[in-house]
Image 1: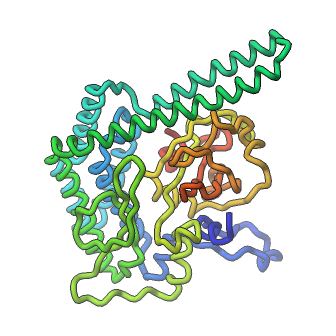
Image 2 (image 1 turned 90 degrees about the vertical axis):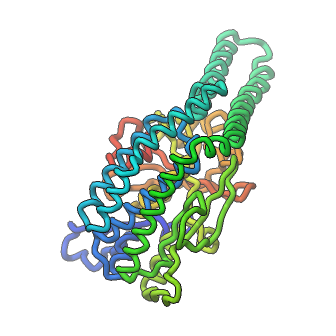
Image 3 (image 1 turned 60 degrees about the vertical axis):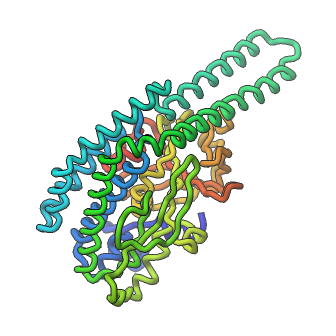
Length: 425
């Protein structure tokens, strides 16, 4: 990880229990992204929290309205989001009369019921097309079904001690290593094909409910923009990603087409017509922008990092990982970025095979294009002095993407409640 990337992730506080004689040797206090914004703009901590809550709510409801098929057979994931929405709504309701309107809109438009309704209809569509489980679960199952026979054959050959043992085992290993990759590719292709073939029809058949979701998202964004203007906060520094262009008073920064269909749009709010932009404080120019992105390439493109893989169903102890299931959690990119902003990192010199001895084609971190990620750097990370985890940094892939993977260091470690939706599937 480069120095610039470390700045984008690092956030720590100086230790309070240093003795007086070593006081002058303390590291300088590093402030979180939220603290930098708060101090530079003269805001209250609850103002920053309110901004974060509203962005989370708007981004999720927009994402669901555009990608409802992504939640097929994912009850646990959707329930987690609904719980998070309700918690943030309850916090906002206590802030101001304007914020109470968001909660009222949430209740009047029956947003949780619409989420459930659209999910049920998506699952009905899936069943009618012969899909009886989520594609993530299907991929895990087939991965297990191909791995077990491989070990069975290897054990059998070892005990039989066949004459040309080595001449047999190496071709078999190559064969078994190739099978999971082929199966993964076929399953991903089936998923993308299913989404592409049914996205438009599903949208038209459920247009009324989807438009209610979009209307609510628009309400939240309008409320947030008004709040930022009232705070005299420079709108141009609050950049965020959405999945549609259906909202007003947004300025498009850039966009990116996703594999499997759909587009990601990167915005900031527009000022009212004829209004001069609020100036960006000098300290914010220096401190905020570099912390908002983890790489120089992303800084130049004004695009927040989003390619996060989480090693779910992780098995291992004492820092050695024996098995895992990689899960792309780009829908939690904003939260994961915030987790990394509040973490400290220590680069370690170990190779990936020392931490994941079985790292190979059948157990690897994959890029979104299907290529195995070459791990460039490994970091032992600490979140708020409470929770340790691995951060694996991938080398840039041939497709141009850069992958970051996070994992627990021990399967029995207790994950803080605030991070359960990140580290636990």
